[in-house]
Length: 205
Image (cartoon, rainbow, N blue to C red; front, side, top):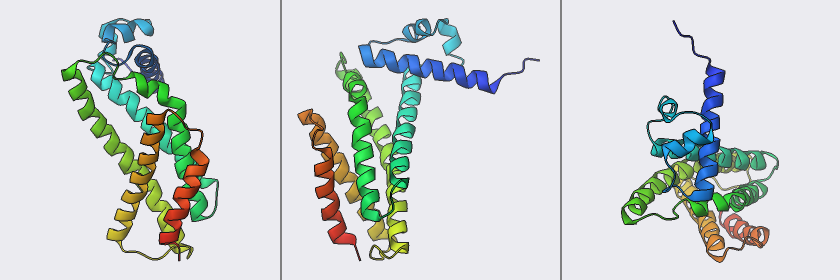
């Protein structure tokens, strides 16, 4: 009977994902094949199929790691400060800083795609965006609950809280999009300070 080693399995999966991410960042998602990933970790293509059935599965796994690391960085920044205003600022700045650091990876993903590949990629992006919104929304909900419990914020019902989380996420995603278009993240803290002041004026007690 063959006994698998979970630690070894995890290490190999991590190798695969790290190698795939490097390849995607250099060549884009479209041009990379399972053979390329296998070669990058010094294994045959058949060994990759034990862990992932396709390049799309590998990419989804890479993005799951990216999202997990993004949310962990945001949560760590939020936990380092005390007031709701500070936490909202920390949330926004951490998110924008992580995306600034990793924009080279995201900018290369759709390079060389034809119309069909781009259409499929856009569908995948919608799924990943939904995961980000869900996980970031959970962090923001915790901030709001924390502020209400401490008496910093007005008490709101669940519907209003859900809408407020949506507005906050939409605002910071809009800031991110404009900074990406301008290719300029220099004013992150100033913009976030203004955004946070506007938000706090509407929700503080």
